[in-house]
Picture 1 (cartoon, helix red, strand yellow):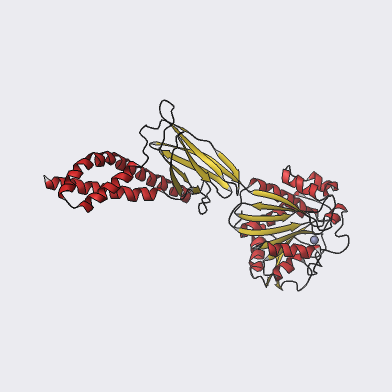
Picture 2: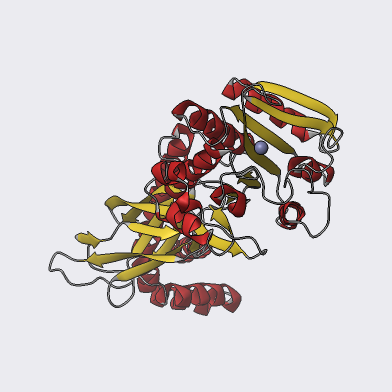
Length: 434
Ligand SMILES: [Zn+2]
C-alpha cells in the first residue's frame, strides 16, 4: 500500500511541476505591438504562421484544461498525501504543499463560454488602442477568470477575464491591415484592425509666402483630399511640409515646386499626398509639394534667385531644405522637376551621381528601369551645378536624385503627371516604404 501512496505522491508532484512551467509560459508580453509581424492578410507565409500559432494555442489550452482537471485530483489526494508525509521525509511533503497552494490561487472559470462580444478596431500609428473580449455564459452572464488567447500576425497573448467577463488587450501596431483572432475555450473568431499612417502638416516660416490656389491648373488638378487642401492653404503663410509616419522603416524626403512654373511635378506631389493618406507605409515620408510658393503663385521659375543654384549657400531656403534632410536622418531624397522641350535636359530623365553617396547611382538606375525614363549618372555630385539641392544632399552622404518630366512650363498633362508620380513611387519602393 505504501508503494501506491508513494506513486500517488510522485504523480501529484509531476503534475504540479508541469503546471508551474505551464503557468510561466502563459505570462508573455501584455502588448500586441506586432513589431516584427507587419503583415498583409494575403501573405501566405504569414497566414501559415498564424495557423501554427493558433494550433499552438489550442495545444496550450488543452494542457491547461488537463492541469485544472488534475487540480481536483491533487487537492483530494493531498489529505492522503499528509498520511504519506507522516511516514516519509517532510521535505517531499513541503514541495507538494507549496505547489498545491499555487494551484489554489490559479484562476479557472467554471462556466462554459457561450457568447463572445468583440469589436473591430481602427487607429492611427503611434496611438495605443484596447481590444476587449467579453465572455458570457448561456444565460448571458459574464464569466470571470476565463482564459482568452488573442493573436495578431505571429504574436499571441493570453489573458483572463475580469469580474465583468472582459479580457483587455493593448494593441499598438504599425500602419497596416490586420486580422485579430481570439480563442476562448472552444470558441474562436476574428476582427479587423486597421492602423492608418500618422500625418502632420508643418508650415515652414522661412519668410516666403504665396497662394498656389490662385494657379488654375493647380486648383483644377487638386485631388479631393483634406491634407492636400491644408497644404495648399498653408502656402499663404509659408512652405508646407507634410510628414507621413507608418512605423519602422526608412526615411525619404521629396520636394516639388523648387521651380515655380514646373506644374506637373507639383500635381504629382499632390497625388502622392492623397496616396499616402490612404495607403499604410513602412517608414517615414516627408513631402514639400510646393517649395517656392512665391514663384509658383507668380507662374515664374523664380523671383529672386534660382533655388536650384544656391543650395550650398548657408541661410538660403534651399540650404535650409538640405539641412532638414540631414536633420531627419533621411535615407534618400528626391527633387521633382519638369523640363521644357528643347531645354536642358529636355527629356524625361532621372539624374544621380556615383559619389559621395554611392547609393544615388543605384537609385537612379532603379527609377530609370521601372519608370522607363532616361538616366544620367554624374561622377561626383555638384560637378555641373554646385548649387543644386539634390547635389548638396548627396554631398552630405545621403543618396539623392533629381527627376524631370518633359513638357512646356505652366502646363499639365495626365501623362507627365503619371510619369512624375511613378518616379516618386519608385523612390519609395527602392526604400521599401511602399
Ligand atoms: Zn526645375
